[in-house]
Amino acid sequence: IKFKVEYERDQKLTNCGILVVNKEDHTLGNITRAHLLMDKRVLFAGYRIIHPLQPLIKFKVRTTTETTPLGAMQDALKN
Image 1 (cartoon, rainbow, N blue to C red):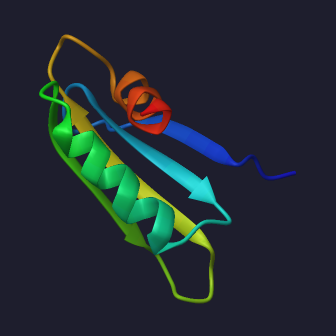
Image 2 (cartoon, rainbow, N blue to C red):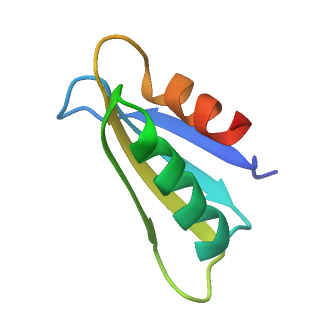
């Protein structure tokens, strides 16, 4: 069974994480990235679609020490 969202810490950067969202496309990706970038605690937010035939979005989020990438993503999705 695949989960809707999977999270892993980025090993190279501090306060950085990668979230993989299954069965979504640019609609969710672009809106979520825009909301993440409105947060002053987010230093970097980007996403990419691995392959056009695979409905997967990979978000990369880097934050300040005030929050975690997962916390910033939760706040962006609530707003």
